[in-house]
Image 1 (cartoon, helix red, strand yellow):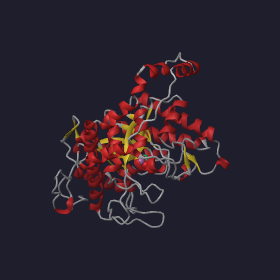
Image 2 (cartoon, protein in one colour):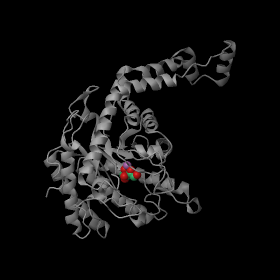
Image 3 (spheres, protein in one colour):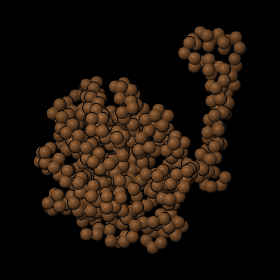
Length: 443
Ligand code: XUL
Ligand code: CO
């Protein structure tokens, strides 16, 4: 059955004339070379299964609004899961992007036991493997949903009950192996309920030790089965819990270092999670790149007027260009990519709205990539930073960093040389203007 018959042909690069209905890419041209690589290979775009195919458009105040014939609660669960999978693969192919991402529960009915869930997952994963080989679509990452079921209300790995921890182990083992079977490039852990609602009943240190143990077990299993994708942690400060332990990139980095897990885990940075943590997306990417933990991105945006995770499709080149610049200057993605962890608005109920949301988001990323390339070639930012820190390459900088130098020796040298350093302009406005000139193409 064809679900997206209003879009008979795959969406293609159309340049300035997107054609009837506007279903063409204006900027995203997979084969265009940008900074020495194909655009498709830079962006490594993925569609997510959950918001796009498993969610009917419900919110906490109202039921689903979307026209999604494949979501049918009266149907036999496996038949419904198969229809959802058909719709998803039809969409991936018609959108013309290389990757998708999924949670175990998006793909397969959970049944009434771990055993039943596993056998449903096996069936659906075999079927997905078949569809992937027919369509050429690849898996960017898989993950396990350990936050929706009531058993996880007090967390999965951080639950006070070890039986819940063990249940989570079974779920992650199965989801990791499913990801491996599908040739996934990464495996993601988002700890939606790994946090607390109140400190009145919480032992933070105990929960941190449990989380670290869990991450250690998962990393060991990855090695045992020979999964060669990357393990990614997705930071988020809160929602659904009041406080989430994987607050932001710096918190995750510190946690990994504390528990000797650096090198086993990298980060999947989500734009709207960065802004919920009080950072810019640019900041989170720059932090991860600088500290060697950058992995992948969940592309979306928040709404500056409210403080929750609205997961809207990205539409601001200004917001994304500088983050893309950091990614590009660090050499780009390795196993990661841009996953659209994005939701349509509840009033966008037509099936074609799913195309419009993704096409706009993809074009925004593509345009941001072009700006990032122009910023790289322009060189102003890099040159300014080089100049600003040049002193650290000189004698004094080298001497300060020498581990044998003491505070007293530096003080003595400063006094003897009668140092009286003068402040210098940080040139912020000039640099902001330069970035705008590059974005506007007026340089
Ligand atoms: C929730 C979120 C998740 C993860 C995967 O905010 O971003 O969808 O990406 O569990
Ligand atoms: Co996400």
